[in-house]
Length: 145
Image 1 (cartoon, rainbow, N blue to C red):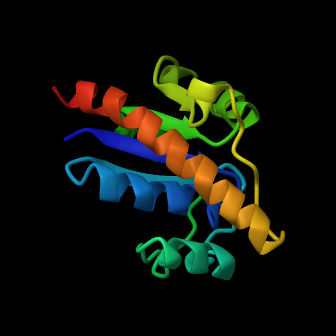
Image 2: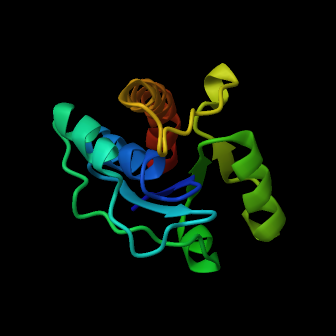
């Protein structure tokens, strides 16, 4: 089974949403998420839960995890929300070279961080994440075959 790791900073907003979108789009793919500076043990942000719910996804059971070697090693593809996070992952886990990308790479776009910001920023982040995930689906499907 193909495995994709979604990475953001706190692992309470963007990566849990990205995970849910990819799981819905490609149910045959194993998807996990983690944060470079995770708020370990925290549930998804209430606004992230609300936005996901309005799009038919329940992320309320999500619990934040810190990015570790086991996450990176187990993944076939690692998708970070920003270029800075992508660089940080490659610096910390040099063996991941060739499988770490930015979710918004197709548009040369960093996904906006909505944490502790207004609902409109969460909506923008959701739109950017959904667009990025859907752009990556064809590439991920190719990996599966």
